[in-house]
Image 1: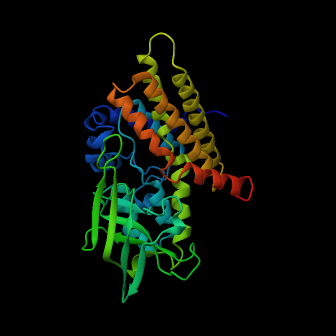
Image 2: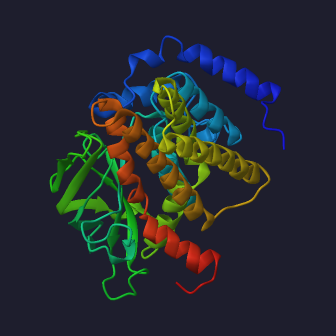
Image 3: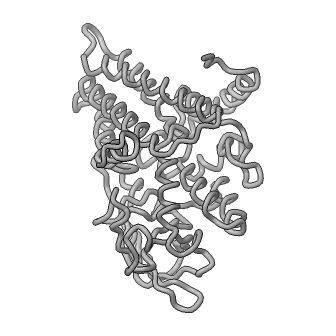
Length: 362
């Protein structure tokens, strides 16, 4: 297998590297400073032709193969630039399950960053177990009326729109009574509250309360009761390697820590280096499969588990190298703890692997 760039990929890499020089340094890579300018970074990347590169041209992408996203992630990490905005799973969800009218109306603004989005899936009593969600949408004329509570909602403080899951049929089996909606965040009946993370970041996550907010019936994505199918598409792409570009970022942090280390290399750092390289090669193999037309489903749970193990290995190395006196490394360790919850807990991923891949009847 030849992982070297083709001439076209090499040209893209050179063009991107040139653009990053002089642009990347204007944006913070972590913390509240990053989140404060995340929208500006999104629009700058897209304006230069470096965001949404693998998505359809009709919606503002460039229709390039998935390997270009890997190049993008690698070069962003090498340049010390912020990561590309994490929106791919919403694009895939709306693109696959939304009507052509909804796709034409909403995908261009989502991709070019002129409209900000959040994902209203998790609830205080239904995080990884989405089938237990209790937020309701009740038909009232041409609208649905929403009541409920969402949590761990990234970008909710700045979002214009929310891709929301709500229960429309309380009598149906719990997977079949859920529908998906596109809800404007700019209306009465919606309250956003920030959540402060353990590493001090105050703007990445939030919780959103719906108390009589309304959504037009024609902004339902798919038919009534089809929300579960959309949810599985979204979380499947959230866990797949096309959005696992953080492999490059893990490798860079490992190399930085190695440069700070004198004398004997901590065992945690050596293990993190092995894990980061394992994930990098795994991502490339997955992308090669995608280029060959292989469609992944439950395999995304394997990818998510590997990413979690790698990030937490790197986090443990950060703690071993920097202790609690290096704020950046301490933040890397603290942030890594959340990976076993984000995008579905590790326990849920193991259940999926056991039941759907290994056939163990989990």
